[in-house]
Image (cartoon, helix red, strand yellow):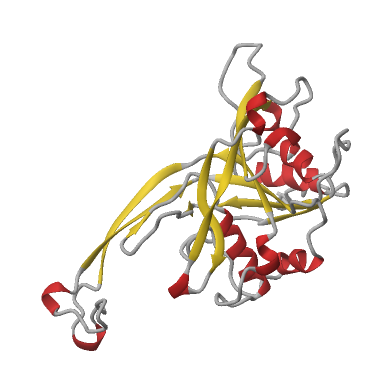
Length: 289
């Protein structure tokens, strides 16, 4: 990372980029109704890390539960509702199983399902540990070469572009300074040179001071709770507990907004690598006339 280190104590961690056509971060999903929160959940990121390490669902979270999650909302995206049917046209041994273990009749085999997604959303995450110790190198290696495919909340939501941005000795500092996956606001007013950016965390956000002012008093106050702290991932015995949610909005310079696609990817590469050299397009040679 190529920005000067901050004055406050460093917090080492991993930096992740979660972007894709679709994402879904359920909190109260049950049976045929699948909701999504407006931001990545702690349970989903823990599960993503477990998948990268190749851990089965019945294995307790263990050391993976000892993480802290700070989310920067680059693009909130838009909520997308998917309504479809399940099991229609099937009969006999192929029909839907009931709660009693029998099969539904052809007249009742069709079930409706409503599932919610975030479309065109992008988040940058600092994955740290509460005691400020560095994440294990096995986590970094696993995210580089995951044992099982990684997805953004559901198997139908693969990540677009790089997921692991790298390891940082000042993860919260870099979370503020990394290029934003968002377009700059359209304004002609010379004083409007900043853009509001929302940060969410399971820890007080007092360690996110801006260069021009100290953190607001609300940065250390709990905003609400989220039921997404995993205790057991076993499919038939999933259990979660509530954890605190802290919110803070920072005003960042608009020159950190790099839009979408390759422009933002080039900006990320330039920030995370001191040896980055942008690729130059090769023009076809013209044949002599």
